[in-house]
Amino acid sequence: MRLFVGCAMWTHPDWQDKPLPPAERLRTYSSWCNAVEGNTTFYATPQRRTVQSWSRQTDPDFRFVIKLPRTVTHDRRLTGIDDEMAMFLDAVEPLGRRLHALWVQLPGSFTNLSALAELLEGLSGQYRCAVEVRHPAFFENPRATAQLEAVLNAAGAEWVTFDTTTLFSAPPTSAAEYEAGSKKPRNPRRAVALTQYPIVRYHGRDDVATTVAGWQPWIDTTVGWLREGRSPTIFIHTPDNASARTLARRFHAEVRDRLPELDPLPDPVPTDPMTLF
Image (cartoon, rainbow, N blue to C red; front, side):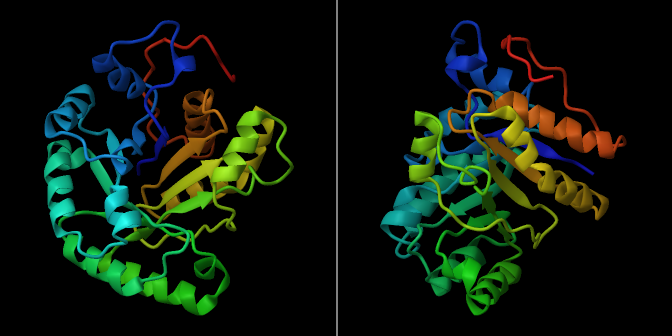
């Protein structure tokens, strides 16, 4: 039984009293959280030596959920991608067991399930995959939902939930909330696990109390998944992410209050004077 928690990045200006050298940022973050979203790979495939440094900075039990490049998912829309995928998979190979899942984030206009099925078939058996869709039909049309689930189930892939219901629960009260609301998808909460490794991206608000209140259904769901023998990963987002690292630990602590047998997170390296407890 394992619960992974993390953030959308491993470095943030508000997370340390003074800037850390690049070689220490991920190492420090990994003492706070045991997983991270690999969003930077969406914009460019990293050099292999860069990924080797990520591996050196983290414990073997740390987990990366690595996003496929936008050239694969958004520009080529999963077609004619053999060269790009080969280069990407070679680059991330040094992560080894730290590579929790390849994250296939698809654009809001994407509905080509045949192309998705072909990609997942080629990766299944060697890589765990997690797919995030944004087209409204997959959430509103039962037939489209069933078709997507059939494709995912055939490849043993997970459906990534991006829960923005708390973010959109009230009008924005800050520039950060306004910006987040202008960029994030507005789809309903979905709490169905297809595999042993469900992945949830939860987006809160500036106000800590509102963020914590909004994730309470996920506490219940996560406890249920753990009791079923699943190992969920929960990523915590806020509009500016300044408190996301501490909130991720708080989420883990709230789950552990319900399941004391859950292993605690390690004691973090003290670089942030903020506290939510």
